[in-house]
Structures are given as structure tokens and as C-alpha cells.
Length: 416
Image 1 (cartoon, rainbow, N blue to C red):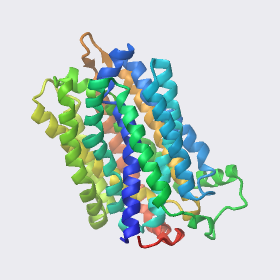
Image 2: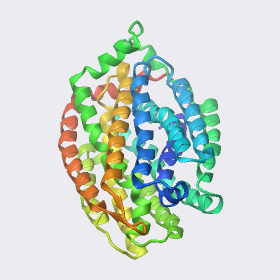
Image 3: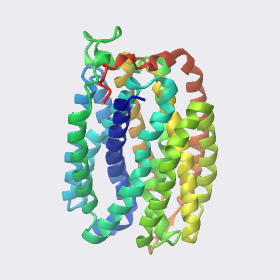
Image 4: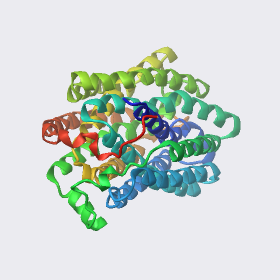
């Protein structure tokens, strides 16, 4: 990598950190937020899923425009809206206001991930993307190590609003760095396949009309099932079913996140060296095993809970990183932004449905005990097996499209 490429990876990873942190902060706050706002598990599931539905809608609407602008400007526009939505979450004082705030945040934040992956694909060849995706997606783990424990600490100190205000402050700094340091990314506007004279609707139609894209979208729809089903109720399950006190949650997330921070880059390197589909298969097998163990836990000592969570997230990362790298090779450069937006939209919609269903399956017993949580685990296992079969189909089509991952579409950038 050049110095500039390393800088881009760092900026994108930090940006992803803030966006993922905003989503993940809601999960550990569930044990505090539900009694504070006097809402039921079904209502809390709706708070989580409304973000996903809003993100899915905006991602689909933005798809027609995603390849018509400099990706840097496109990214900054949606990031500014995301910061505004997060600020509204920090100022919310009731359930309806929080619901609207999550809609705004999802409407802007849901597009950011697709732009990040489009930029990554523009700047790095396919044989390097496992490593790059591994670094960028360590933001997921970093949000656990730094963000979630800090969020829980501040929420215990100043209330559940404080973590969102913290995210706004960090995001503002990240936005300034991107504005000043990230070079324009507009090479796709000069490519031979650029749809300069095509309408936004026509460009969107051209994207969703390709058979291999439809296969990729269908696979994406199942990839997010596990996260959206289990994570929203993770803290409540850990506290009320597993017997870990609220003040011990920061330790749990801290240790688990530290493990996955080191795992992400290693998984990325393994995907580039041993094959992205092989790594995905390993991750699927490990995830299935750990989900079955995790969702059937009773009262368990903290060290064992930490171990189970750490291994579970290793499995999740071993699916996320190679899956992202494989998907990045499917679209051609002139439809890359549109493909990523639609893919993100599909992921958010399916995730929103999964979260809403989870809220209906899980029942809160007197004392906060969650019933039927193990049923969510069985659904996740089934979805993981189907996804493995579908991802094999994506893997088989990669040789035909891998050349589309060449970084020639990006404008040349300075060394430093």
C-alpha cells in the first residue's frame, strides 16, 4: 500500500467506527432504555428495525445517483445527515421522538456503508480486498472496545442520552479529517461504461436488472439476519438470563472487542491467502456452533460468557470480511456505487424485518427474563446454512468479474 492508501483505510475505518457505534450503542442500552422510556421488547425491536427500514429506503433511492457524483462529496453529504440524526437521538425525551430520530439517522447512515465499500473497491484490487476489508471492519470491534464500554459508562453517569452526544462529538472530528485529507474519487465518472446520459431511474433499473446482481442481493438479504435478530436483545439477555450485572457489561464488551480487533486483520489476510469462500465456510461453521451455545445459556460465570462471546464474534468476523470481499468483485465499475447502495438497502430491509420478528418472538417475563431467545438461534442457524449455499454461487461467478475490481477507476492520488 502507498501512504495515501493507508491513510484512506484509516479514515474509512474511523468513519465506519462512528456509524457502527451509533447502531450498536442501542443494543447494550436496551437494559437501561426500556425501563427509562417504559417500552416493551416489541417497541424496542421497532426502535432498532425502524433504523434499518429507513436506511433501506434511502439506500434504494440513492442508488440511481450513487455513480453520478464524486464519491467523496457523496460520502460527506450523507455523513452530515447522519451526525444530525444522532444529535436528535441524544436530545430525544420520549419514545415517539426517539423513533423519529432513529428514522433520520438510518436515512443518512444507511447509505454510508455502501459508499465506503465502493471507495474501497475503487482504490484496491481484488487480491488485496480481504486485508483492506479486514481493517475497515475492525471498526465493528473497535466500537465494542472503545465505544460501547464508554457509552455504558456515560449512560450510567449521565443517562442514556450521553452516548449519542459522545458519538456526535467524535463524528464531527472525523468529518473534518475526511474533508481536508481525502482526495476526490471520481474516476468512475470518466470510465467507458459511465451512464452520463442515463437518468437516475434508468441507471437503477440497469443495476437491478442484471441476473448476477439479483443473486448477490438475495444472498445479502440473509447475511444480516443473525446480527439484527440477536444483538438488539443481547444486553437484556446477558443481564436477565445469563446473570451478568449491568456494571459488568463494559468488561464483557471490552474483552470481546479486543479479541475481534486482532481477529479482523488476520481474517482478512487469511481470506486473501487461503481463499475468501474457504474462510467464509470456516466462519459459518464456527458461528453456527457458537450461536447454538450462546442462545441456550442459563446463569453462567462471567469468564465463560466472555469466552463464548469472543469466539462467537471471531466466527461472525470470519463471515463478514470474506463476504464483503467477494461481493465487491460482482459489480462493474460503472455500476459499483449503485450496486453497493441497493445491496446495503436489501441488507437493511432484511435486517429490519429480522429485528421486528425477533421482537415478536422474544417475550419478557416478570423480572425481565427473556423467553424463547433460543428460537432466534435456530432461525439464525438455518439462515446461515442457506447463505453458505448461496455464497458458493457468488464464489463461482467471481472469475468472470474479478477484473472489475481493478483500481484503475480511481483518480491518481498523491503519495502522502
